[in-house]
Amino acid sequence: MGMSVTIDTATDQDAEQILKLQYLCYQPEAELRGDYTIEPLTQTLAALRAEMRGTVVLAARLGAEVVGSVRGTVDADGTAAITRLIVHPRMQRHGLGGRLLVAIEDRLAAERAAARYRLRTSHRGADNPRLYRRLGYVPVATEEVARHLRSVTMEKEVTLAAA
Image: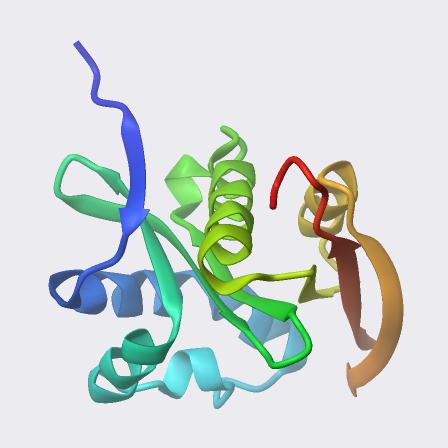
């Protein structure tokens, strides 16, 4: 019998696995940018643990293994910044990214009074923007981050059902 993936609050004990998964998942982004010094690849374990104290961090677990994670904060005007949505490559295209995104949205609306959600993605990969659009996000800004690479900011309002 196979195990199912569970999503819950990340603990300090998850930090090392999250950091290793983050490093694995951000390699393609670094390659696109031609820059392996991007923050997800240089963040230290101590910095991640410090970030986890003030941020909602969720972990997707398959047994004891962390196979996905996402982070979120809410600012004073109610805008939730959703960051570092990562899924282990072998677990991608099975709906886990969508489950993590919905879980962080629900948590930020319920616990931090989020009024809208904001995230950033690269325009080069089709999968992430497609997922975000399917879940109601719309592009609101574009920024050139490297030659031939743009970052797209997408937003969505919190619905009454989510709040």
